[in-house]
Image (cartoon, rainbow, N blue to C red; front, side, top):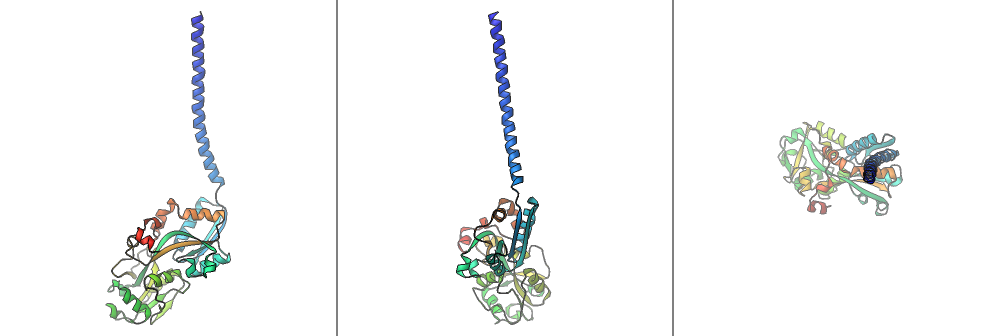
Length: 310
């Protein structure tokens, strides 16, 4: 009888232990699920709200607009706007506090005083290459220009395309205003810092897309534009090699092509929480494909020599 009772007690104890183990297993699963659910709920509660306004670089504008659209899709209660106007405009506006982010193709101290530039915080988000473009009638014959030839064209010494192997047509330069970061990059890295960039006949536009359109519609025209504006093929214009090197990101990454710069998003001091969330998104792994497909370069892809050059 005692043996029977002992067996029954052992069986009962085993059942309790098994039930306890089962209960612990369920609790662990429930705990993980709850934790996951809590993370998801926290993410939902932590959605970015308020307003973010940015303007500046027209070269960075396509990427800024795409990123803003994507970021808002995940944060529907956020109001975010992106406008152009040129790098100088973006830097002055963020300094004045009229926007949260000032977009620029160049470092702030290239457009502002050292004292004003020191008030801004630089957030590098991508690379931008700048290409020399010409009207299709010129592109049919001129595939490459040396730095010396390019400087002579923009300096006004060469006035006709026939002097550099092109058609017998007058050269018309389509330029950006001095507030443009794209112009600053081009002057510094394509023209060796040459300040005379008006040539013999020069037209000026304050928008990269307008410059592209004007070069396409003007016989004998030459200009320069960010690679982000060349993502879509345009039979009315052609890109020109510089010293035998194509303006591509592969050549920028390997330090072969020099006409490029960082794309900067400046804030006046440290950014407020919603602006910081957007800036973090700009450099997240989620943005890499968008950066590349939009005609920009990924900073991490630069080789050591290219990175050291800037």
